[in-house]
Amino acid sequence: MTNSNLVPEARAALDKFKYEVASEVGVSLKDGYNGNISARDAGRIGGNMVRKMIHQAQNQMVGK
Image 1 (cartoon, one colour):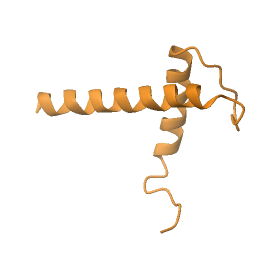
Image 2 (image 1 turned 90 degrees about the horizontal axis):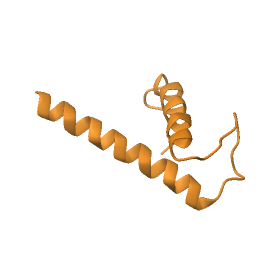
Image 3 (image 1 turned 90 degrees about the vertical axis):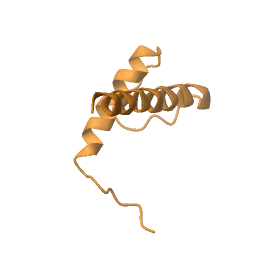
Image 4 (image 1 turned 180 degrees about the vertical axis):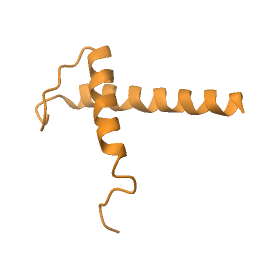
């Protein structure tokens, strides 16, 4: 399997979302590569992104 984007337009939205969540949890990200952040901080960002996406999906299911 190749590493290709199924929805290329989603990349910009996810990047924006990542920076918003990082700001909320107090992690400073710079544009481009952020390999210098700790695994703990990266996990906090990713975990909160997933939590928010699940919450949004559940709210959309309830609204139907």
